[in-house]
Structure formats: structure tokens, C-alpha cells
Length: 431
Image (cartoon, rainbow, N blue to C red; front, side, top):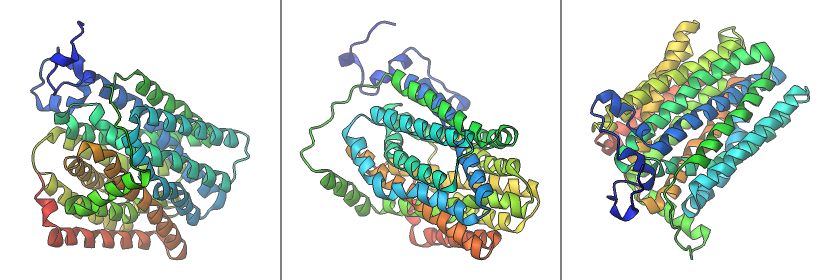
């Protein structure tokens, strides 16, 4: 392909999009659903990250079931989530500042390599039958540190992979990729765990990181001249926080994400105990339950990608906010596996309606020079709230029981949904 001087390119065409100039415009709705895949860099990102996330979900599922086998306590299920999320509270905002200062690709290569090493350490402990609950907790904490620096860069990186008009589609496809991994990873983990033990789940996760590291290294990213920063890190951090707190819509959306993380996703910490004690199943049952939620989220993300730029994101957000507690109430009261799976599919669908539309609405409001810092606040609240939800769910379930814990979470989310309609009508009106 002939080289096209950058000076002759319209600003709509980034250097990483040159390969798209020769491609015909896709007019079908199906083509628009996967519009971001026409970008070379995004294709590498999508398939590399998909493989990596499948491994991540294998480890997460196996890790939860392993610590429940070792301890028999739902409190430890909550502790794993809590310890893994604590670094988000400490480091994520600084991760956002760094993501605005250095190459986001280079930052992610470092963080993903760190995660690879941690996965192999856990695998080695499991293979030698030396793994103890405290090992899992320490490694979960270290993985949380890596995630705290990785997540802001990952959320902001989308603008470097696709053209601006495809940004919403790319966010939706990112969610599709994440939830496809949630469907496949836990199911494969359950089968692998039952057949070969947890060590192979951790090993396959370590191997899976190679896919995203290679993908990042092969991307053709447009060189970005980083500004000379004369302000301190703390000053930059305060600038990002000031922007978030002065923007009512962004602040409201981030606040809702925190509520969903604590009282929605936090309840999912109990799935290993639910599979064993409520549904009288085993590790395979646990994998299927996690996959069901992922399947619902994947369907939701594909639906949002298909809808493209149709302007009713706020209405879809509101629909998801109401459906989530309804599905949680339903899940809390049933004891039959097929209906439990159906409830988790609905839970995953509604969760993605809230999360994906919140992400897209926030990204559409944020200037590029603040994107990393604003998305670090988003990431902080999302990942930082999950350990609080995990701790609450584990402790409350230990003192009372799992179904009552889920009912309380559903009740809080219903109050949030009603409150958003009454006090935050601006969300519903968002296009």
C-alpha cells in the first residue's frame, strides 16, 4: 500500500486508520454493529484482550472456589474480593495521572506482564500443593495493584484505537469482548478444575496474557507528543477531581456505578457458596452461574453495539437500573438451577445497560487532556466499591444467610433506580 503523507490526511483519519482508507463503507446494521473491527489496532486489541480475559475469568472462578474449599467460609469469599479491590482505592487516581503523562500502551505492557507473573506464581503454589488462604489473599492484593494502574489506561485507550465516530461502538464491543470471556472463561474453569485441578486454571491464565502483550506490541499507534508537565502529580490529580465534582451528570453517573458495584456485583461474590449451599451443586455449577451472568451482559453489549448511535442511551440506562434489582429479587427466592441461570442472564443484561451507557455518556463529555484522570475516578469508584460490596456480602451472609443478603442488595438498587428518576432526570434525557 502506498505511503500517504500525514500532512495530506484529513484529521478524521489517524495514522492507525490508514488501512481503512481503501475499505468500502459498511452500510448494513450488522456491519455497523462491528464497525470498530475495521480498525487494525482495534482488531488486535479485541482478539488479544479476549484471549487474556478468558484466562482472567478462569483464574477468578477457580480462585474463589479454591479458597471456599480451603476454608468453607463465605467470609473468605468476601475477603478475596475486598483485598483485591483495596489497591483500587489507593492507586487508581495516580494511575489516571500516569495514563495522561506517558504512553498508555507502554503502561499496559508493564501491567499485563506483572499479571502474567502473578498468575504463574499462584499456579506454582497450586501444583506443589503448598497454596494456603493467605497466599491467595496476598496475590489478589498484588493483582489489584496492577489493575489499579492498568484500568485507567485501558479505559482511556479506546480513543487511540478507533476514530471518534466509532468510540461508542468500540466501548460496546469492549463490553461484548469482556462478557464473551465471562461466558467462556468460568465454564472452562469449572470443567478444568473438576478434571485437572485449580493449578491448570492459573497456568492457562498466565499463558493467556501473552496474547494481549503481543497485540499491544504489534499495534501501529500514532505518535503522541506528551506535554511537558510542570505541575505536580497532586495538582494534576486535583484538577481531574475538580472537573468531576463540578460536572453534575458525570458525578451522578459515577455515583450510580458505585452503588451498582457494591449492591449488585458485590452480591456475585457469593456464587461459590450459592452453588454449593443453596443449589447443592459443585465447582461446575459455580462456573455455569458465573457464565450465565456473563452471557446476559454479552447480549446486552451486542445489542448496544447494534443500536450504534441511536440517541436513547439515557432511557436504556434507566431500563437497566430498574431491571437489575428485579432480577436480583427473583434470583434470591428461587432454588432451581435453570431459573437461577435465567435470573443471572437478566442480571447481566441490566448491569451492562447501566455500565456501558454510563461509560459512553461520560466519555462523550470529557475533554481528551482530562480523559485519563476522569476515567481513573470512574475506575476507582467501580473497582473500589466492589471490595466493599464483597466484604458486606461475605460478612452478612456469614451472620445471616446468602438469600437475605441478596434481597437487601436488590432493595438498595431499587431505591437508587427510583431516586434517579425523581432527582436525576438529566440522565434519562441523555442521547
